[in-house]
Image 1 (cartoon, rainbow, N blue to C red):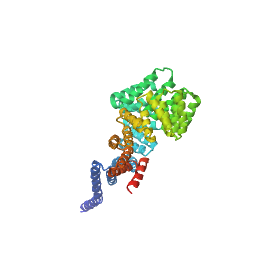
Image 2 (image 1 turned 135 degrees about the horizontal axis):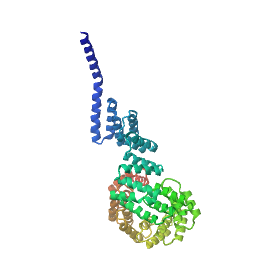
Image 3 (image 1 turned 90 degrees about the horizontal axis):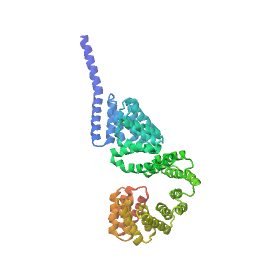
Image 4 (image 1 turned 45 degrees about the vertical axis):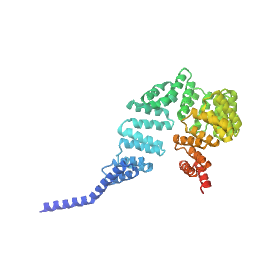
Length: 470
């Protein structure tokens, strides 16, 4: 009798427990179903919340915190993702993929040190993996710790020897650190992925040239740095120039290049340029860099003086003539700018920047639009037919020449090539306004405002809307 009563009590207790926890369990399973459906539909924000709800209601499924965090990160909710990753970390429930994404979230939030910590944790918990090592390499590169970056890439390539991107990145690093060793990785990258071939060929040509100067490491670093700068790898170019100076402290050209690339990495290039000028006042390239610096500082008169010295030293160099034209145009000396650009086209008839400069100056000054301007615009279309700016300038030139159909065709082509660029949208609106297509003009002005709400094109479009559509 007592035994039966005890079993009855146990049964009642079990029933009470089930009544207490079953609804929570069922709701948690419904949360999981919602999360799966939302994720499949691409509604990552809702899916992330559902995963988090499920994690709270199904505490034995600790891995759901990582899923919630990863999904929140996909939804662009980085701050929330970091909180849920931390929850998963506290419960020791993060997977390898979670740790990788945890680092990505830190990196997205601008916290590189924490990102490095997370990727290192992935290695600590799950062993060396190529994805973590590649990310660590990028992080160390961003911090200027290039040898550490190289070490991580070497580990990644041991695990994934056919990774073209890793070979290319390692080749770039070696170009800055040890130029003579860079080509094998670069060539391997191009062989694995043809999309790397164009930049590899640029580096290959210059590195082969540098290799001919045995016993001149400063020059080798200079050549490698110039090639890296041409490809827009400003940080590595700066490191190459720094090493050139380390090898030869009075290397004026390396100081000038260092001053130039520092401006592209958000640093002050003036001290390096001053050092270059103190070492060599007879270098046309150094004066050209000086002119470019002052042009960026919105001091065109100083830029013009520097570029004049550059041209005086090397009058047959088309690049220096273009630099002189740019400085003169910025200073409002349009006749001098036209003369410089024309001289550049005489020295190099295929010089795109010279023809572009002539087109712009003709438009801005109104000088010989039907002659010089039209010819320059046609040359742009011949030399760079797939460049949106060529068609944008040609469209503006056609508007100036009162040729509305041609202007519309050219500007529509510019929009086709660069649909997110506000400039051709605004210029097409001006064409429509000029020739009475008011409704079409209004649409293009709205497009411009949407594409550039805080920029100069958007500002102009807003003023035109206020003027023509009050």
